[in-house]
Length: 306
Length: 306
Figure 1: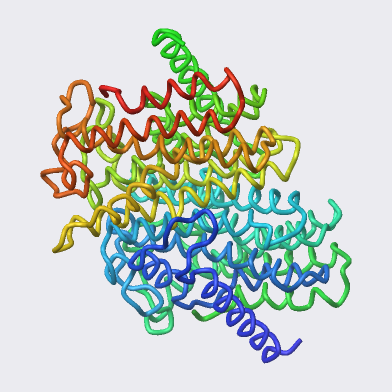
Figure 2 (figure 1 turned 180 degrees about the horizontal axis):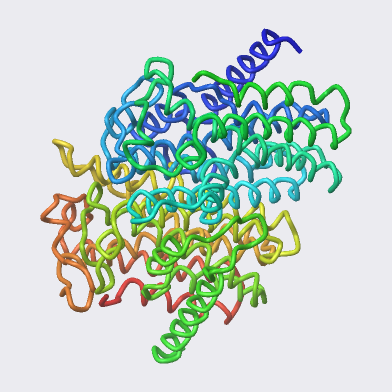
């Protein structure tokens, strides 16, 4: 697969996700909803439709495609993951958390609206993600719907993303720096779990065997770990214009990163080894040529410049 | 049913809910969770285990009991609703929202911990509610699990509770007071939807016919509306010691209430008529003597002193 082919697929997935999110966040209330308040909906749209690479939906769509699953099921499942990702950014940006004014080159939600609206827009997107997954429109089989809900809730909750963010805030205040083991666990929770669940979604939607699902899971874990190292490198070296947010924050805040623990060179080597692990796990899944896009995704994630 | 019998049942449901929440919020991670960070878990326990009447779980448990459903299914479903209720209180109390220091006679979550932890504890409980519902431990039938998730997400999201809170904050800042119609819609969203979903949970767990489910739904809607008027009356007249929170806030903040629109006497009459509507809806459900506790619950909700 050429780099150009890969980027085209990534862009197509982003456009499809944007369209799905746009339709899901329409003004008309669904059955069981009383009304959709205009300003809150506007803030949820601001948070969810603000662009980004849409890496998570891409991973979910490509994983589902390995099993021939596409269309509405994959699109809605991918959009639900993106809603969770976007809500977490809006809450993480709040003054009480990371206190960021800029996100993807635009004012953060609490700057564009106000703090209360940013909190509620996050709560609304978090809740809506599970609504979308549990809705029969996502899949005719309720077992698949229930499994999607459970997998996403585990990845996003206190034992996953929310727990990782809590550990991160604690680590900033702690007297002693985190050990390497603690740092890896924090990152696996904060960013790894949600990246991993993208491929789990493919396996659930596709009815993968336990063995294939486990191989994809190893891919997802390795990709998630490589993503975080790449993120730390970008923060240390990146320029703000390309990132669309402030760089150099990690050092400023004494955040736990592998660069701080290992140095830049060893962190890069570890990142490259994780890409190898990810690609090897895909081979273990024995799904043939179809996994080429996901292999490219691991390389892309590790070497991206924004 | 005597008042004493009713209160005993209410207390029993509260104790059972406390035990279920305590077990769900244990330190050991579940399958799919990486770890449960101690301080975040402590904050989630503070928010969820801080007492209260546990009216919502009681309504869910009693509704399920109409169909002979009890045990783990009903207990977990009821606990999930209470998690949503408790998370919403923690977020509503934040400085950017209602800015309250006291809740149930204790410091609010952001006072006892800090703002970031209160936000994350809320996010964690919101997410965990859907985890609990989607878990096979709640019900063997995945269709029932998916229906519980969908009903709760609709009641809690932008077309329900979160949307109602957003409208409430907007109304405080608005130049013109809300009309009666707007006030009723706001209240149906902010507090009514979550009370209504408690009886919906009973109907879902019990496999009620569409007709019976609709009759119970009318009960839930009327009870929710009566609850809100009673709440407004308590705020206007109540004493802080009994409430465990500050009284007189509504007038101070120019909140939209039916008392403001109709006056106290007409608001009381409306509340009493809603209790009649609720009791009549129960009779429509044709479930016999079993509904006596829910009928008493409507009276209790309307006439409570805290």
